[in-house]
Amino acid sequence: MRHLHNSLSVLFVGALFLAGCAGAPEAPSGARPTPPPQQPTRPPQAPAAQPRAPQPEPGVNVEGMTVFEMQERLNELGYKLGTVDGVAGPRTVEALKKFQSDNKLSPTGTIDADTIKKLRSAK
Image (cartoon, rainbow, N blue to C red; front, side, top):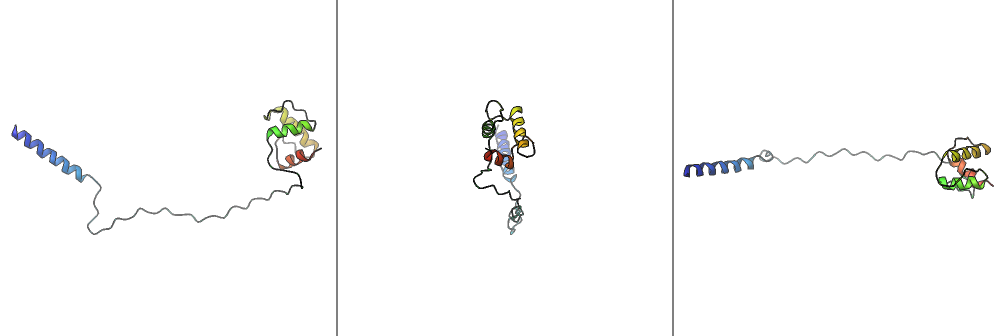
């Protein structure tokens, strides 16, 4: 029994010793650890030149317009498109195309700065 006890003790101590050696490899004596490589940095880039928007007429706001605002304005101007609900359905698109065509704009059915300007300034 004593022989088995000694054998287990030797195995246990050996296992502990080997587990301690299983860590990271040591650097040679006198060697200093090297820092991790640094990522290259990019020089700051100048902002890209953006095209200048045409200057609006005084008193006419050409900021974005919601579909709801567009529908209200088209209804006020007599382009009957049905219920003002904020959804650009087929009737809204057709009313917008008609307005654009009547105002010598390209009848795309989509809102753009020129269309907003005309919608806001139309009487």
